[in-house]
Image 1 (cartoon, rainbow, N blue to C red):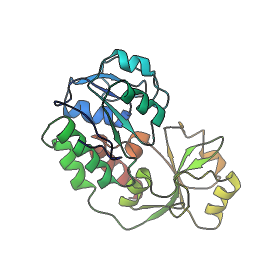
Image 2 (image 1 turned 120 degrees about the vertical axis):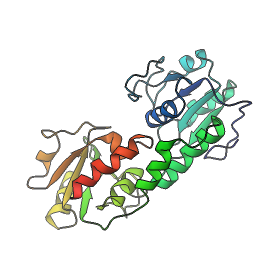
Image 3 (image 1 turned 120 degrees about the horizontal axis):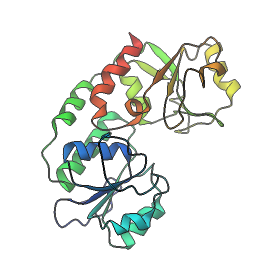
Image 4 (image 1 turned 30 degrees about the vertical axis):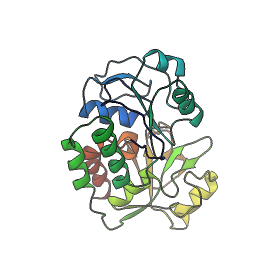
Length: 253
């Protein structure tokens, strides 16, 4: 088997003891193949009833804890996890499947399909088929948005991001979609100018990785129309995509 980055994943049999270092993959594999997770990160909050040993954060997992769990497979992501941790695990004989940071919904679902059908030897789960169907259409653009994912400093969605594609498909364009960086760090006055100049007419504020609220975020953009959204609906590629479509579609109605 070969992962998304072209690296060999030396599994001898379908994975049964898996440690996931990616919250959205944790949800995807547990919903699709319950009981095969041997560990997950502290940020793996779904399924809410998941009860497995925790191995620290996604960006800085406790690799020794992962090794102690003796997994037959570790799931990682090229954007969320550090290459040195992946190499440490591989050097200790642990197969690691690295999913590429997908720029589109179809690409993400295609990657998950490969993990589930190849590493887990499963048939396609119903949620994946349904997610592909509901996200197939791209609706006409009704809003042009600035989408911060952090403040202090301000960081926004730029080019080729999964969250940007999610919004685009429900009719919300990204004011920074042509930026040379995937996660630009514009100054606040530049962001405010986007609204003043008419380049943007919607502020989309997710609750992760930075937890924007009605009192933390909108006040920096006086007069701008804003919406608070679930970061899970915006950036997670898994079963939540099914409900995310209807939740996010309401923003443009």
